[in-house]
Image 1 (cartoon, rainbow, N blue to C red):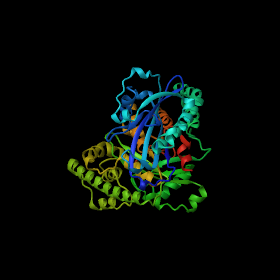
Image 2: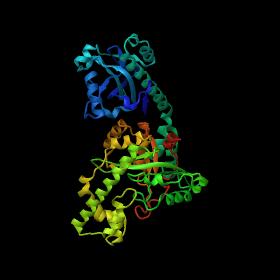
Image 3: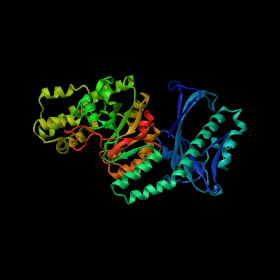
Length: 504
């Protein structure tokens, strides 16, 4: 859960300083919370994330310095990420600045005898009379509210105000966890011994409990949701109008069109068309952005953004040019390695595409020229190797930039098909924490390429980090992904998603 707290309506352009911090809520068996009293303010142990430092690294370092503990990250979980817009914040040097402080709050349960641990306080902390104390959870809010230093020190007021709001989130989450404990255990047991129908029933129970999501077997009693599809403006077979008609014919009530690195297709759609109005289909603005990553492939889905946002459109034009350079490099690599040469008319037609172009377009040329029978063979025989050799020339954008583009255009950002990152469970969880820290809103739990085990894992991650749940078929058409049907994932047809609740 990400909370933006901006009591003074400070605009982003008015922010003069950005600060990132981490803090840990430690609770013992006596229902006491470990609190630091620093410079007259009450706050949880933790501190600033240094430049080029990962969030978890910073948390481990700060807790080691302030408490003396070497924490095990498997025993902690995220409570919330709190963005606090602070107007006229007084610095220690006498300056006053408008700040945005992003703090990642984690929690754990452990009993600590503070006298047994050696702390490594900074001179600033020693000078500020930094002290740790256990305070009963039921009394902590009153202690903070009655802090006499609030009246005379706006810095103290900011810190105490933030802690009060974080405690509200923590208490709410704690109550939900208590009420769901028994039913969660029951669902887990059902999953471990389930067949197809038992699995779907268990998933429904867990989904309704946490994220208002329902995944159902292949039935047609209700409208279906598919938030991941492609048109011929990127690497799909169908035009936007043809895709919408296909969706209507397949009982889809909500359709997300998410072309790769382009929004040209969704900008073409006439929402007043009688077919759309009469069917009642809901078309969600979407895009699938390719992000640079050291391993596997990372795609960030964007939903419900302003298609006329200037920065987004400028970046789409830049990505179109980048896609041309990338495809030109691959075509040239095919010529070098295999002597494959395409006619200039075909190349010119390829580059005249209004949307984005990629390897599937080259695959179709290889099919046309008789080098392969289908797209899969084209990738296996030629394109995967050519891409690896030319990847260094690609001018990709970072995950952080993808998320910022979407969110600054008023949209919602979602990690697509997480299994394509090719990360183990530990690496994936660390990557998710990094992405959440830069604003990721959701994760694609349901997808045509996910196994049952992967679906369960991504659902657990969504629930653990309060991420919105999304899902879709990743439909391209019969030439690119012949085994993928519109409206269907590997676990069934989607009937409800927490992401749509957010959009509504």
